[in-house]
Image (tube, rainbow, N blue to C red; front, side, top):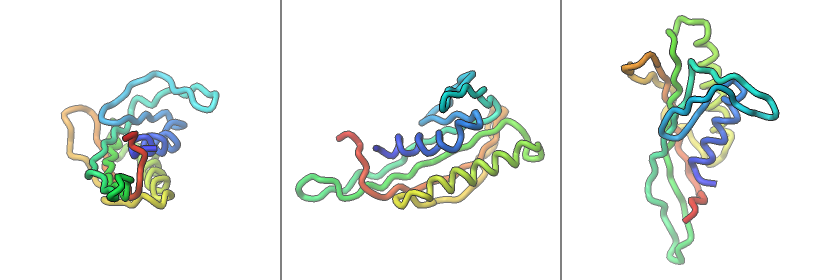
Length: 140
C-alpha cells in the first residue's frame, strides 16, 4: 500500500463513523456515508484534506527499494468558533488521528498540532504533519 492509501485508510477508520470525510488534495462533499452496513449523515461542518510531500525513494543497486520518506500534511477544518461546544469533539478527533497514525511503527509525528491561518471562507483548521519512513508499494 502506498502512503496516500495508508493515510486514507487511517483517516477513514477514525472519522467516517462521525460523518467526517477526508480526501487527498481537495474537499469531497457528500450527503451520506455508507459504513459497515450503516448510512451515516455527513457532517457538513467538518472535513479533512491531506497532501503527500515526499522525497524520491532511495534504491539499492539492484533497483529494489531501500527506503521511502514521505511527509503527510493533514488539515482538519471546522466551521465554528473555538468557543462552540462542538470544538471539544474536533480536539478529540485530532487526538484519535494522532494515536491511529502513531500506532504504525513506520510513522512518526513530524509536527504536532497547529492552527491553520484564517481562510477566506467560514472554516478554521488544525494542521498535523506525519513522517512515513519505510518501503511503500507505489506501484512502480
